Length: 367
Image 1 (spheres, rainbow, N blue to C red):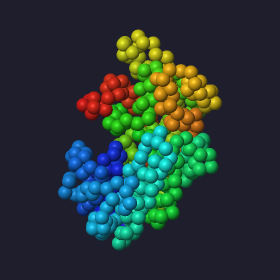
Image 2 (cartoon, rainbow, N blue to C red):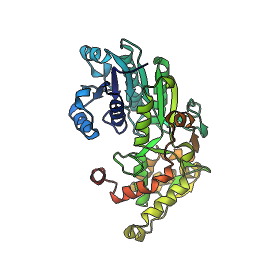
Image 3 (spheres, rainbow, N blue to C red):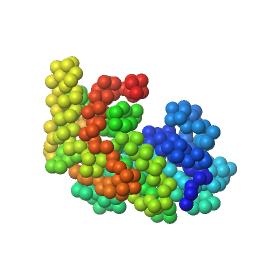
Image 4 (cartoon, rainbow, N blue to C red):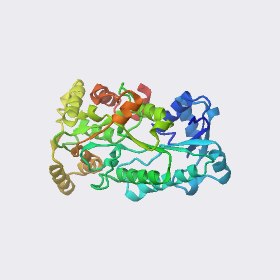
């Protein structure tokens, strides 16, 4: 099927959604888009940075949390006329959120986007951006159709995205589900334009505020670059040969062992004489059981600062002790390439973070 009508995009002001849209428009000169935004002025600024022609995109004010996405009947009719595809990239991504809050956006919001797609006058491709970590507490090799329900999840974000995938599978007869792992930088140069839990954990390590991390034999860190994920989604989202497929966008076997990751960080940061003089010790790597004992002792006896540190890591760090390898065979074959090995850009990433002082504003100036 040639998809040359309209695409409806959520999350277009986010790190991935906007880049996907820019690539879709560039590859398909006749394609037009509607984007769901809470702040049209912010969207216009973001679109300008991405080089998107504003004449080809109509921003519509709405919100995933509102009934009907906050769209009136006339707007819904305009969107669904000649609608070919939906790219649903918006999500509540905080690892520390309550499950009720995560479901309010990631599950209920997905249902609302699906409802809009169901009003289209012809079959619609529904491309859903999920996360590889719907695998939750599973370990070992993770196939693309695997979920994590049997063993549970580490945080509410993982659980809510797994529940949203089930909603998409039930409601969308023509769908593709993308499961990226954690995006840590824009591209192979290591530049960072959006923070997440990985960057905050690295900052704690740089300050010597993370004395221990959970680990296990074979533990690796699977992360990817934004340009790889955006390229992949834009290339595959509208292709007919991915209908009803689930696709891992992950480093897979090119993930970085956790102990090597820590070693690289200390080697790079030690080039700074001032940091080296502080004699910051790398975190000890312990079993999850030992780490839980450490957490409890900190919460019972330590200073407020360390309690905040341990609390911030509690929704993310346990994944480090649940070693898994995401199968990327489908993505590699469809794209004709694999994600970059993490070790190929990790030194530049941690160097960039330290050089910019983990400041988003300074990061943008340095980019």
